[in-house]
Image (tube, rainbow, N blue to C red; front, side, top):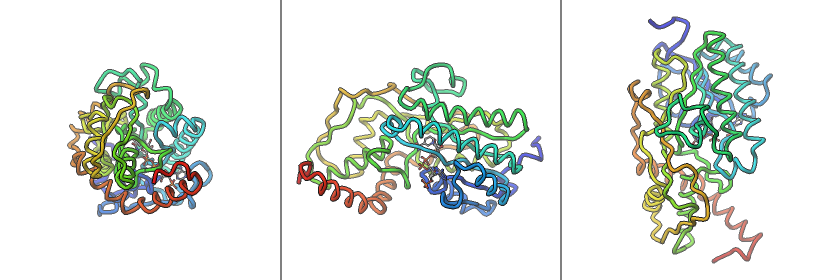
Length: 338
Ligand SMILES: NC(=O)c1ccc[n+]([C@@H]2O[C@H](COP(=O)([O-])OP(=O)(O)OC[C@H]3O[C@@H](n4cnc5c(N)ncnc54)[C@H](OP(=O)(O)O)[C@@H]3O)[C@@H](O)[C@H]2O)c1
């Protein structure tokens, strides 16, 4: 029987989504703003800086949400992780500590926290299950970020143990969709490919070169499908607060992904693979059976997710990207290939 003190979505909830302007947060805001049972609360970074404990505490004590979704943090691809490890560990640790402690302090019983697939050991058996967490060394490049994510998960379970809260860590595979970062320094592989193919098409290039062999297999989930999984978890009184993986259940090789991205963008040139760059782990795929048993399954196949993401990119980033390219050509005229 459900403990009366742990609220579920069916009863109607005031939900604070932290990081509502980001990739995951904006999908959550889209989903929850359409539900009559939900009173959605958000705050821009200029209103509440989540690295400031006093601001977080003041905001949560004023709003007193029933549930908090922690979709804020410092997130980025390999290059961003490699160039700013201190920021990745510190900002994520501080945001998690402020929001988890602040939520408990404001009487919030239910919280969803986001982990990440990179929390799993580098040489993890496939598919990856929560019992594999902390059983081996992680990918060194993203270790500071991954350690912060593990700490967030342990913070949640510790508050559950000591204070009887239900703070659940969801571990999604790589997420993509509208609102993703297409910054060449910061982005994950999928938006980076979309942008690279798009720019190659625009410039009339007849080939693109991609890093690695293209053989590594990864799992990608459309952000709105993740938001639906979050709703499913909040409607349920089953989960104990243990971590829950959220993935499509199938991986695709980077070569296969590149082929689909090329198809969506309409790039007809050749793709070359530079094998001097490392591939990373041969495969990363989550065991998502537990969330499927809760009645969730992803609706968006990769091709239509890519189409929607590319449409968003064209509407929202293309002019900014053009301006960046013009600026880069102005400052480095020798790199202008015409
Ligand atoms: N993207 C993925 O593939 C993926 C995969 C697995 C797990 N996750 C997890 O999902 C969560 C959300 O990721 P995402 O991809 O949606 O990231 P994102 O697009 O970069 O969004 C992060 C959000 O956090 C906000 N934020 C960061 N620092 C803040 C601060 N000090 N004060 C207030 N707001 C702050 C950002 O605000 P601004 O808009 O003002 O910058 C942004 O809205 C993260 O915990 C991440 O680890 C993501």
